[in-house]
Amino acid sequence: MYYFFKSFVKMNPLPLALGVLLFAYAVEIGQYFNLVEVLNMQDNAIMRIVIGSSFSWGDIFCYTLGAIICLFIDRKELKAISY
Image (cartoon, rainbow, N blue to C red):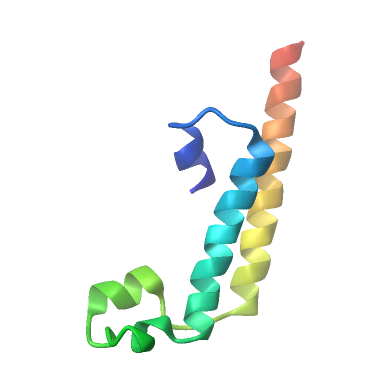
């Protein structure tokens, strides 16, 4: 999602990465609280895929690691362009 938004919006990498990371956390929190069932959409296969149905600390870790990697790559790209 980071690079998808980055292809359309020119902005500082840190706020973009944090925004995408917070969105990912929000989705994961929705899964923790069974948002699909709260919205009474458990029979809707598309919504179960879009919102998700199972919380995982591993996902939280991977989202965080992904944001750090994106920032690291952007930092390298910015240094390469400035030379």
